Image (cartoon, rainbow, N blue to C red):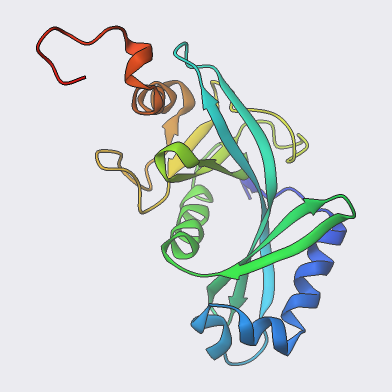
Length: 199
């Protein structure tokens, strides 16, 4: 199996299991698919969610771990996701959600299984572009909670993505990061406006 899923912290998994076992937490979740699920629901495929906070004009990136996301499976498919976050008391359940990124993540993971090279699966969020990617890290033995995108890693934009960025296609970091840099760079960093152009 070429795709490696890093182990989530045990307290994060326990907090999701506790939330799934709580009728109140499930009932109050804004996830109709989860509330309507027939049979058991199980958290699977824990992925560390890293946030790309800053892209410099040189293309260097700064990332931080924001949490762990679990796909919640019912039967043959994922019906929702559970997010956990780190608090002063440790990892705790944050919220359930559903939407296009749940099915998009599941699809991207299935596609990644067909790649010839082994990768470690992570998620990389780019809040400045309202974008989420499946980050395929080349070091399968690395700590999933640490590190930043290496030149040899792949990024798979999940749907929906910003206009002009194809989804579900693996891009080398060296190919996609310059595009993200250009889109995320404020105009003021690109130099003074051309005379006669809107400021």
